[in-house]
Structure formats: C-alpha cells, structure tokens
Amino acid sequence: MMIADPAELIATRRQELLAEADMQRLAAELPHQPSVVRHELAVACMRLADWLDGPGRYFRAAEAGAEDWVSPPING
Image 1 (spheres, one colour):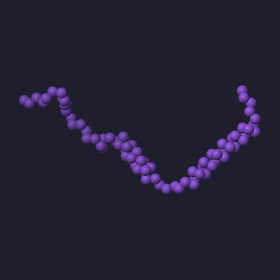
Image 2 (cartoon, helix red, strand yellow):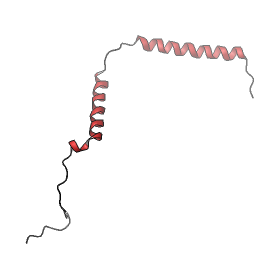
Image 3 (tube, helix red, strand yellow):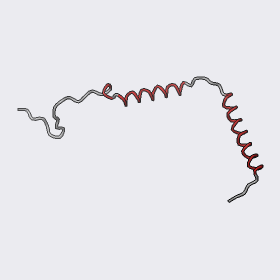
Image 4 (cartoon, helix red, strand yellow):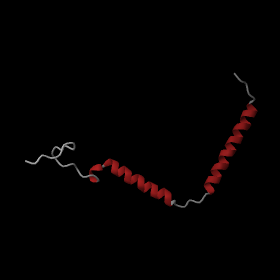
C-alpha cells in the first residue's frame, strides 16, 4: 500500500478540477449555432427508424401462390 502526502493529493486534484473548469468555460464560449449537418443526420436517423418500424409501407407484399424459379413454366 502506498502512503501519499495528502497535501500532494489535494494539489493534484485541484489542478485536475481547474483544468476541467477551464475546458467547460471554453466550451461555453463556443457559438451555439444550429448545425445543418446535425439536422440532416437527425432527419436521416428518424427516416431510418421509421423504415425499420414499418417496412410494410415501403415494400410491396409478395403475391400469393407458389413460384418455382428453377424450372421453366409448364403450359398446358
């Protein structure tokens, strides 16, 4: 078990907190303009989610009846 100086631990933690506060301050100074790319990405995600939730609206249902894709149709 390592025994560390409490004053050193406090100083290190204080430096970490100051650095985090500085990053948050800088982030708060960034302009809050709406991003076109984010909006378009959100629209695409919503369309994909809608498509995954209701694929019946986008695909035509298969017609009833058996189909044999290997052999040619028999007329007669």
